[in-house]
Amino acid sequence: MPFNLLKYGFGDKYYAAEEHFTPRETKLKSSYDVVIIGGGGHAAAIAYYLTKEHGINDIAILEKGYLGGGNTARNTAVLRANYLTEEGITFYRDSMRLYHNLSDEFGYNILWENRGQLTLAHSDGAIRSFRWRAEMNKEFGVQSEVIDLKEIKELVPLLRVSDDVRFPILAGLWHKDGGTARHDAVVWGFAKGACERGAEIHQLTEVTGLDVEGDKVVSVKTNRGDIKCGKVIQAVAGNSSDVARMAGIDLPIHTFPLQAMVTQPYKPLISPLVSSPHLHVYIQQTSRGEMVIGGGSDPYPLYSTRSSLELKEALSAATIELFPFFKELNILRQWAGITDMTPDYSPIMGRSPLSNYYLDAGWGTWGFKATPISGKTMAELIATDKVPDLMAPFALSRFDDFTQVSEAGATAASH
Ligand SMILES: Cc1cc2nc3c(=O)[nH]c(=O)nc-3n(C[C@H](O)[C@H](O)[C@H](O)COP(=O)(O)OP(=O)(O)OC[C@H]3O[C@@H](n4cnc5c(N)ncnc54)[C@H](O)[C@@H]3O)c2cc1C
Image (cartoon, rainbow, N blue to C red):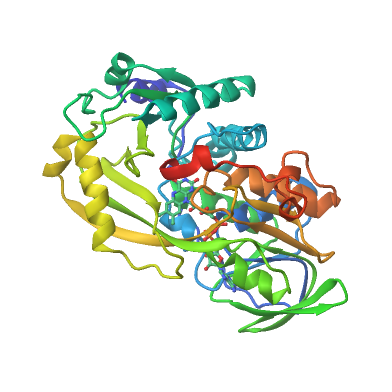
């Protein structure tokens, strides 16, 4: 931290604090070239890159609540690229590269911090899979290595590395590129940039149906009237199946709540992001000092954002096993989002069976890190009608031709 103080204090680069962006209320027009359903980070990023890189400005984002109030507001902001498959690693790697420049692009600080991410192994099987991941990561330009207990202790001195626990830590997967950023700042920056170039964001505007004629969506029905549309994109995270069904499309998705909780702020104690898939827990200390704690999805499909005592107990027990001093901390609040899980833990992006309807779905527990790259690649597809190479592996058709991209081994409780 003192180094950063000096760097920014004496450097010529000054980042202002983030600006809270509230979309201006405008009249809903009767038609748009592009309609984006959902007003989260992904929708804002798609509109941003459409306006910025492709000169497409006649865009309406339709959001049933308020901008960025869905999973974008509820996620724990783990940013990493240490996935398992070539397709996953290259996709998230390029997203991380875009994150590096977002403060410059937006002209304010998105609180991007390159802290590194440490995943813990508590079994020989986990060490084997970490070795595999580390080699795949390095092959595709992502920093990742298996480290021993001594190195773990140096990175996170307060971690309990001992034999007298239920599941002793045996090794770690150290991903130096990992980090975090402030979620609201990301969605506000994309939204502001898109709106400055002509895109409109309509809050409290719920899509209630889609009129399909032949292989096209001809109009979008909303609680504020119908809109004619050129191209339509759905980017509705936890509601992907419901909205796709309006277009007559069945997605291979099951929907689960995902909870998290946060403590009061404390002095800086843990620098890297730490996760234990074995204990189903991950922890990161925010730049404000709070400990953000999350785990795996709830065990049953449900559309609900209630919090449960069960989860709080499980996360607390696992956290205290890793960091005994956590028993002294106070939990401030707990919350949940709704996550759309695909069978292979990869997103569904690109074309749909309808010729002017596009999917940005299946982001499960891992989609915040993909916000910039999904925006960029979806915008390229809409503008050029060519599927970008990075996006091609995530087509819906992979479930028919058995070309799934299995990231099950690299997702778990690391998000
Ligand atoms: C607790 C939790 C922790 C997470 N942690 C991480 C993490 O650490 N790292 C990571 O990368 N990802 C994480 N995720 C996942 C991540 O939050 C999501 O994948 C990502 O935010 C999805 O962004 P989005 O813009 O697609 O969706 P959202 O931000 O959910 O936006 C979709 C919007 O669509 C709107 N909508 C839905 N239906 C309609 C309709 N019919 N009409 C109009 N609008 C509609 C919703 O109101 C919502 O605002 C986490 C998720 C949760 C819940």
